[in-house]
Length: 209
Image 1 (cartoon, rainbow, N blue to C red):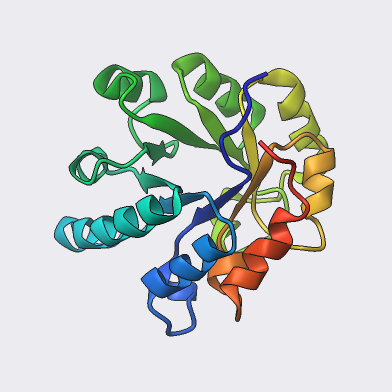
Image 2 (spheres, rainbow, N blue to C red):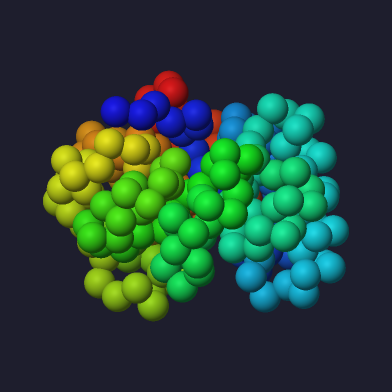
């Protein structure tokens, strides 16, 4: 089974920062030990996204963290990100792999066992799997998958799995016990009053890579 390079996968959402600058919140999270950030600001025009990506690349490099760009291969290439993260409505993972070769790691959002297996077959490096619990950010994906389906996913794929959807301090131990390699979170850190402390607390319950 492939080992993950990180334990906590922070996904950005500038609308959940409570009025703070996104870059400042991410800086705090990095200070708290986060080693992977996915820049996911899909509604930003490409030039604005590129400026933000450049800032994110700078602070992730300074802290030895990895940067993934959601969906925009051009932005990922421009800032020399570590990887790209794609969803089910993006190009298929095998096509993305042909385009980027081994230049980037590829993460894939999956919401059922079939998608998880297809991502692994297509050449993904890791997947997010969920939503495991109820969460406002994932309502469009329907009913939460739950812990049992996460256990099934673990038995079906050998690549790293990051559980996503409603992961908080009170349930992160459960997703690790079920076989997840780590957690992908948005509001648990981005929306926290103290992002550094939130990251530190979540990392206490995730296994070392």
